[in-house]
Length: 422
Image (cartoon, rainbow, N blue to C red; front, side, top):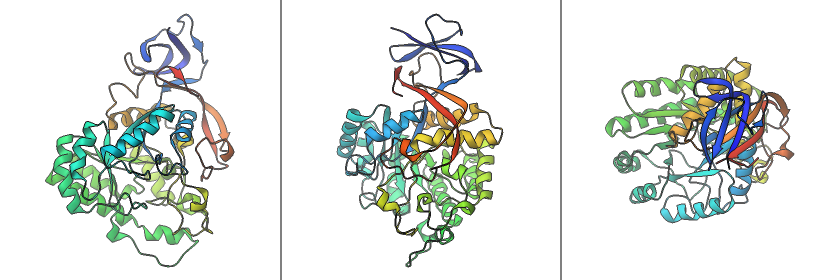
């Protein structure tokens, strides 16, 4: 049986136009004329490809009380995300071996209502596990240059990476890098409720130094490197230079860096804590400019939840868990900021569907509404606004800095392989 979805605003390869999307056996069979018979009519709402979120911490198995595939995938579907890439840390075991991958895949297969792809971990001493992880199906690798916050996933040094890089170069999968140089971070012994103290402890120089080191390693052994969660546009000169020299470096930023600014974060508001930290409004606007210019390649959520008690530390920024939960609202958050700046929704789709599909190695099957591609489809009313109510969020814990914020873009329906999941 075929399913037909139509709208006056369908995002096609030729632009937004009236069309019908014909689905058969889980794939897009054809993007046809608007008046195709038997269509479910979505009026003037936008039919677009499903969002691909390449940076999600689901934390299962082992820390399912933090999140889990059941809750995370429902939040993803409600947010228009049809594929997520699960980070290898915060689960026990971490995805640093094939056994760890098998445990994670079993959990996801049983519980997730959206597509899940997997990221393998690069930690000290596991270079021998990288090829088996690739052979077992990971889409990318991930490493931390600073302590990750969990003991199962230690940070790597430059010497560790020199062992891993020749292997990674052969495997040709991107290495996602948490790029902060620990030598540039300021040790803090006393608690503080002041956001300015936390911000000062993780200066911009830490990002610059770490990215410079990664470019140096890439010169030595060309390997695809993807810089995750860029918080400061000052590092883009280093990245631009690497790209100009032909080095395969890409970079993302996140919805929270594009939405919030340090100036608005009140003391004790630990729900805003993440690493690198949310920086100034000047930095936020520079990130938007870099997205528009193409210097920043894509946007991913870095959904990193935890139990509320780990955030509610009497407002102490240094003992609170660093991570922002935003899976369900990441696309609306970015669309809200884009719309306010006169950026069309097609650009947001490019940043969150097309380019993320390429990073995940899925550019020939996902991220666009093309014949033969997977029928991962979202219907959104881009003109409808809503206020974020934590009680209505589907991820496991309702703690989020977006609480009470008005956002544009109401997700109306989400289809995975042609099946309605929201």
